[in-house]
Image (tube, rainbow, N blue to C red):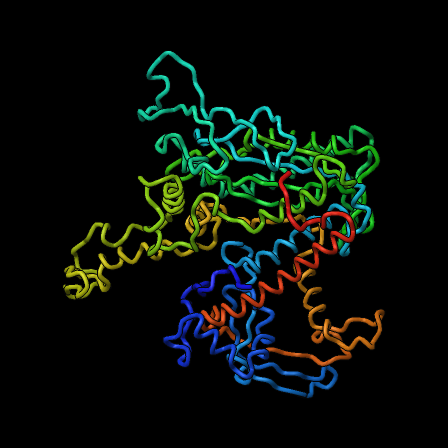
Length: 598
């Protein structure tokens, strides 16, 4: 069995290039040759065990340093190990990237963790009380408004029985019946109609009918402030529910603050788990699991059901009211002094979640749906890149290019520093003798004659690189983040977020997994009820202190990547087979194995 992963290590850190085939004994070997050399090494199985934690990672992180084992009670040094005595003189650690296009294995782990985090907030478990299954909960989809007509595929009447395999005939893209020959043209003379019935895989989907008519500036600004729009929407929904509680005669809850003061709060609050997804047109939209909770008078951190009488219909009404009411205007910009309006689109879909498994939208379905999108990024738009700077922006931005190139150009143009002083080369020159001037000299780089201590032309040329650096504080220019997130088309938020009290954290799941791996090979004679001991946080055990530093990224050779990834692929195949056999024995499909769309 061979791996299907990318075997060529790639650069993943700024200033760090590929580390493939840099070891002298492997120079000149092919991937198969270097793999054969590694496999014939007497310590081959020891090397496989050494890299097992990062075997499936396409670009593992190499750490170098020493590990010290000390006795916590006395601080006495018990053992010292250095990575020089380990295989490859380094410790391999998985990169942990969430993007499936960067590292499929690490993204798969992230996706499974995301599924557990989201589902625990609906059914309980992993520290979340089981009573959350009785809380009203809905699955809401928030979309961006229209910034111009784009090619789409809409099916108004579904006749299929399975939406996952929908083969219904779509409606024409942009149909318009008129006898005027000029009515079907945009102001730029391009067709404003499209009678095609696009297939789901059509590459033209999401592309504007006219690139010049499309408002690219507004879209990237909307992506930038979408997080603020969501925050205001959630606050508006909570205010609507608080007003509903007052009308029903439900009194507010009195909480005692740490300073001893009594504060009255609404008896209900919203907890959410939210995932962001890029549409084909490059605008983000949000999928949110929204749960209605009550507030405990003595323990604000407790998760309790809301007061009696609140239903999913009330939650639905509150969200729709908030989405229609919230209207946010961004701060002024030199290109748009009045700012841009940031509102939700007209396509708002809210569905109640069924926890019995018999409804249209179930807990496992929506948790898997959001977890799937948490590992994606801008791939749907055809754009994939790392953070852009003054040297690389020209490869992706083009004011006269395609749709994605214009979006990136809009990010870079709108994110320019608005308060930067005029470059020295553009300032009026005063030839009167003043302190700070020097004798007239010629710049050896550009040949400019000047009396400034620094060449004004070279300073202006270097200013483009300085403009790409993030500005602090960000509040001075709220649009400065557009350049930082130009590779994300202006969206700088995380693709999976949750409320503090919605569910458990990713860190808790990672710590649990680390504890399990450290103790999975322990002596079984301790018994099934014996406590699991972690080696770094219990007082009655030794303490391991690592002083490790970054040594590089990627496998040493493509042969090492071939062997490690193949071993990981075989392990994943065995794991998948075991899950399928277990699901067959239980007589039901294992929840969360294959996320499906709602």
